[in-house]
Length: 115
Length: 109
Image (cartoon, rainbow over all chains, first blue to last red):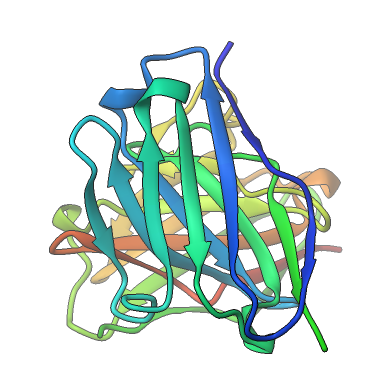
């Protein structure tokens, strides 16, 4: 059974760093693109970027380039989304998804950034 | 960056038919945009209904279908059920990046 299990909710202060994860099971992790999607409170979906774990080829939306880092560790079948310095506007639900046909989604990780 | 536009809201009667559309600011939507359609209910992760214009997943109810219509991507719901009430999003591909539409709130009433 394919599963994407995301790390738990986070509460952070502005300026702090954060790395959330998406652990994959049930298929060969390295051979499917994994994507990240943001949903701010009460708003729509936003495509952030993708990574191909086999060679770490990464593509970003222009809106998110330089704001976040997407990475992956093949040895533990896990993809990551990372911030160096969080802002209040990063408060959102973040979803990972198996990207080619968007068939499997993680349950979402709620990130709250507040002073 | 392109802008993808959907109807903000639509209403359909139970058993009725409704078509949601997805337009691109760059011009006509084609199969090369690989249109996707997602359904999201409150408090849930999105669920993918349609990929590559008109392909369905095993869980996609037969009453949903995807197409290209008048230069837009389209999602048609034939025989609406109360449980179809949700937010629907389209996604288009642009040279390696992807852009979501703003979403359509579908009410079944």
